[in-house]
Length: 164
Image (cartoon, rainbow, N blue to C red; front, side):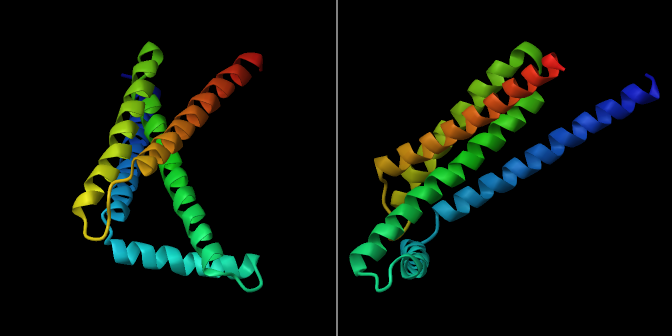
């Protein structure tokens, strides 16, 4: 095996290893946040909501603070799982090549779907938390957005390479 080919293989293995490590770290973060105590979770959200509401409104009411907290919670679900979908799809597209890439994207979608519902389902076993179907759906929608952005980025890159 020539030296150039060997260094190319080592580079690919390095990218795959770093991608998997980043994905595992992200998944650990998702699970750790999901299994946070209900009191701690709501205290953090309400503290942030109060700070944001005071910047938006001069003298915010409790209803405005609660609405801000709800938007923060929804945004956190969508944003966190957007990153999960994006990174999972990236890793699957790095690992699976050529015609198997579509299987990698489908696999990434399956992993995101299971993770979206798993984290919500197991919240009912954590003190002060409960399962909400709407949160599971938000998780899934965020993952889908991340998957679509990664696939769109890949397809756009392929188009630009062909045009140049």
